[in-house]
Each structure stands twice: as structure tokens, then as C-alpha cells.
Image (tube, rainbow, N blue to C red; front, side, top):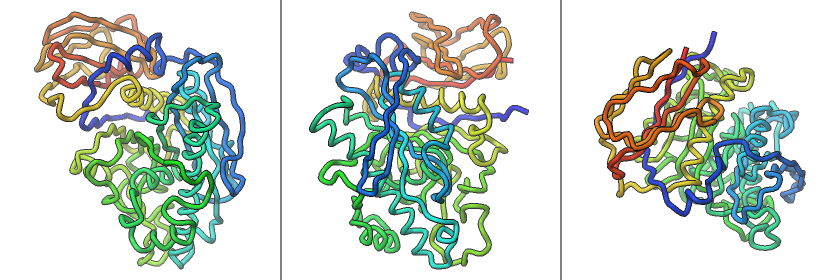
Length: 406
């Protein structure tokens, strides 16, 4: 049975910038227009490896970067080569024009991760966080020296799958040593301080947004005003990274109740994002457990399309809270649909772009200037689609809606 999805999109605030549109011509960053090549490098003082994917034949001198970390509960025996979701994302986004990287990071043992001494698993995760920061600095250093990868350091995106998402969520949302609870401060101080000791010192770990595929944070209040945007996907019955704040990995009963390594997934983070005004997109898989996309190609294509559109808006546009309003109300019906999709809007719709679940444009219409519009979908294949609407009054934010054709 196909997993049903629903979409929560918070604070959609994009206006297109002419300069950005120029560099995004020809389907770049949406369609897979390149082949990809892979190289492996050592990026840290602990001889950690990462695979770097590049678009073959790309001549851009300022390419956005995506760094992803693999799943595996921070336990030895897993590595960057065993996460099919991360591998697939790296290949797909490189073919769209990004430079992408899949990183290894330091791992522990099940015994350490389930230790009754809570400082042990915290220390292990902070080592991995240190490695994640070193991977960012590797590319920033390259840009400042040899510029081999031609990275646009203003467009660095970080994230991962499961444990890898947990790793980079903490890189993204812990802004300083002073923000950290004492138990995390202690672990950081024991591992080189806030920036860590994994290598490439002296360069920034700044990133633009985070990709969380079944990720979470130790505490929701790590997310505060002005923090990084995020795109999030998770099953609401996830027992590994709890959807709501709880002990991870099935709430292992051998862990003492006072242990401090709880994780808070999307169910707890969503209201925090809203309360703090954080730009975010969220996709929830009702009834699904941990990383449903790992074993389901349709779900993988769904999150790929979702993340593709999220990143495209960053790379090819701008976000500004003060330049738009959020008054446009749009409905698409029926949903699911078959031959016709009706659009009803509170504002005049100027143009429509419709994408399939792989991010391919299947329909474009412009100069509409109507509040009611009908799309003939009789000739489309069954499946999941995203409909993006822009308005005649450019002070209205674009809106993206999901539609299922059956």
C-alpha cells in the first residue's frame, strides 16, 4: 500500500532575483542535465573520507554545495558507501549542477551509545559533529586556495539521513558554546572546543540551510529566532529518531531515566519552527516508521522532488520577510484528481508550473491573471505532482501545492 503524504510549508517567502534566474537557465538545479563523476578524498585529521560528486562538463565558477552524512545510529559498521539514500541524492543533485559530498565520520559501538554514563554517547556524537564541521571547512579552504571545486560558499547546504541528519542538525542549530547545555559544552571542550579538532582550522562552517531526512535535535529550543531554514521529512511513527521528544532507538529500557540524550523529531520541531518564525518546509509520512524512503523508490522520488524545489528556491531566488505578504489562500481540488485539477485563489494567479515527483517540469502556463483556473490532467501519468503558483501582485509569495493524480 502506498504511503500517504501530507505537506506543511512554513513561511514561504521567495521572490525571484534576476541575477539568480540567469544562472538557473536551462533547467539547471531542477533537471538532471549533466553526468556525474565521483572522487574520494581525505578531509579530516582523523583520516575520514568523503566521496565528492561533480557535474561533468559544468563550466560554472560558483557552484552550490550539498554535504550529506549517512545513517547508522553513530555505530561502527556503517559508512558513506552503505546509505543508498545519500548516494542517490548525491548523484541526482550533481546531475542537476550541484557539487555534492557524502562523508564518513567517527563512529562508536552499541555499548558506548547505550552506556549508562550519558557523557559517553554525547561525547561520541560530538566527535561526529566535529567531523561534519571539518567537511564544510574543507570546501571553504579549497575555495580560498586552489579553488578546485569552484564552490559558491554562500550556497552551502548541509544535512543527512537519520544519524547523519542528527549530526548536521546540531551543526546547524548550535550557534556557540554558550548556547549549549553543560553536558554538550563538556563534550565539545574535550574535543577541541566549539569548532572541534577534526582539521581545516581557521575557516568558516557557515551554511545556508539544512536538509533533515528523519533527523532531530537533543532539545527543541536549540532552534531560536533567526536560525537556519530547513527542509524536513519524517515518518510520524519513527521509533529510531522519535517524532516527538523521547529516547531514541525504541526508547531502550536499559538506559537510565536521567540520561540526557533524548532526541526531538519533526513532530516537536514543527511548532518550534513556527513559533520562532523559521523558514521551513516539512513533509510527514503518516503511519510510517524510520526512513521509509530507504526501501521505497516512490517515497525516495517524493522526497527528492521536495528537497529539489526547496533548494532551487534558495539558489535561484531570494527570501525576504519584509517584501511579501502571506495573504494568498489557494486550494486545489479534487485531490486526488484524475482528468481535471481546479485552482481557486484569493489572489490573481499569473503563472503556474507543475512538476512531477522527479522534479521534471510537465506543465507551464503564464499570463493567466485569474483567481480560478483549470488544469487538464487527463494526459498525465498517475502519481504525485507539485503545482507552483506565482501571483500577478508580486508582493504575494509564491505557493506550492501537492496534488495526486490517479
